[in-house]
Length: 467
Image (cartoon, rainbow, N blue to C red; front, side, top):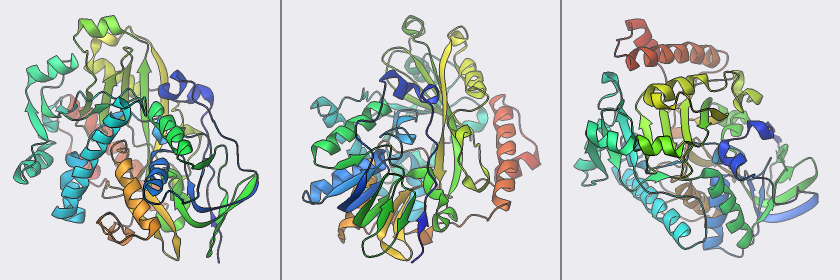
């Protein structure tokens, strides 16, 4: 049986790590795999998806022997690099409904709302310290082209009897954000922000307390499939009955998954603390904010007064060969800084102390997919989170646990299970060349629309080719 080769992740140098990771001096807490070991379930990847899968399996079958193999340290990937925004899947209910139908779409949306409450309980009970602030998630427009971007989700929720969002006027947004640039939008009140690295390391601690074995600094080089697959690292071999692949963008190296995944970069910057300035412009709460441009803009302020500004840049790599450029962009966050100063000109004299990047694994439907590899019914995967994962990963853990444990329930039967329903992407080099053309068109369209100028017909056409 053919060996499955994985591409070892390129770990970020300490100076290229996210603000979240550097601010708490995050590091490995467990030893690498050495020698031979056995378990019932091996999980590749120690981020949100891997940890929630381990915890959910332990909820249902506490006797299960679970070992997590993490290439760097838990939370060093997307889980510790994101923008820290927490919101439900109700914002994507139109996309969910188109893919999985009304019943499953509602079930999944409600499950993410429940996951937000689970995070709140974990914090208030003292089980996790993640700086969770449920001050709301704002989806806003700062140009005429962005107006009503939320319309499909907002109207569907109302039609289905779910009052998840409220409309906002200019004055509401100004009072919430301290910026007058955005002037229309909606808010999901039961949403907000977290310190994502604290959450990731907290999940690591919870998993260890539940008896999960974790080996950090243990990148999996290859998997020999079979009734009991063998996972080989540089220092040892792990034999398991079942395997879960939860390594996000790095799974694009598997040919079977590469056909459905594309990898893009996201760029984030963080300023020096400026609490007095933010107090002066009345930006005081923990709401998370999104600007409805195509390369989505997302931002928040931290409890300490730092400003986090992220943007999906759409940066790509040929054959999804992810390298060090995905850890830190050579432009040092210039695009983000420009946008931050557009939204908050008051911040022009506040230094930017951190800039970092990260790869995002995307599907054409912009929703994750769960399944097992075609010829290997005991090797499962969770992939395609599209940069939205803090409230979604606890739900992903439920789906993966049901698949791994062989349950026939709402999770294993939900419409996100099964890759055959997803759109295949073009092969290389057409994929790479086309993506570069489309990316340039989207950037040009964004830049013009922010100025309330209309892009040309060709630009609109090319930008519309994005998945």
